[in-house]
Length: 263
Image 1 (cartoon, rainbow, N blue to C red):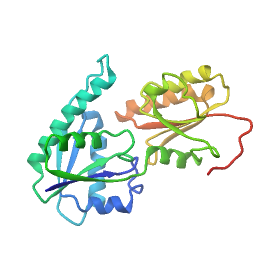
Image 2: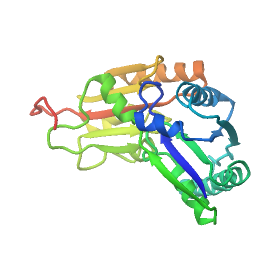
Image 3: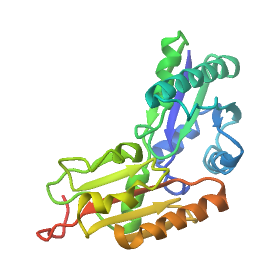
Image 4: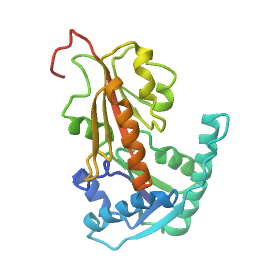
C-alpha cells in the first residue's frame, strides 16, 4: 500500500511549521511538487528549502508535476475548475503510480492549512475514486488568516460574533449578511476598493497583508476609503517585483458600541 501525507506548511515562514509537520516531513520518501509556471519558481524553491531544513533523517527525492492550464475564459467558473481538477487528478495519479513504490510515503506540501481553499484533498479523493491503491492523512498547518491576525495584533472575532471566511469572487456579489467581520482570500482584483460605498459606512476598516509571516511581509491597515489606493498600488508593485503574490485581508464594519476584547 502506498501512503500520502498532505502537510500544511504555514503561510511561508519556516518557523511557522508545526512539530507534527516536521515529523511528517521526516517520514516522506517522495515529495510531489505541482509546478504551475515559471513565475511561481520561488514557491517551489521554498518547498525545497523547508525540506532541506527539516526532512533530514532519511533520503528523499522530489518529483515535479506540471500543472495543467486552467481555462480562465470559460463562462462557468465551477465547470472550469471541475475540469481543471479532473486533469490535475489524472496527472497526480499518473505521477504517484510511476514514482511511488508500495510501502513508500509520498508528500504534498500545502501552503497554510490544507482545509482552506486548497484543492489537493479534493483531487486525492478523485485519485482514490479512480482506483489508486493508496491511503492519505492530513497534517494541519497555520493559516494565512491566523498569521494575518497575529501580524496586525488583532483578534479575528468580536465578542460573541461570527467571522466569515470567503473569497474575493464571492464578496464581489455584495456584503454578506449576518456578520460584520469578513476574512477574504483569493481576491485578485481588489474587491475591497468598491465596498465602502456599497456598505455605506465611512468606518469600514481593512487589515491587509501580503507574504504574511515572511521576511517580505507587507501590511496595511486603516479605513478602506483612506488606504484602498495604497493597497492596490502596493499589491501591484509587489507582484511585478516577485512575479507572484499571496495576500489576504480582514474587513470589519465599525460599530460605536464595540468593546475591546475577544472570546
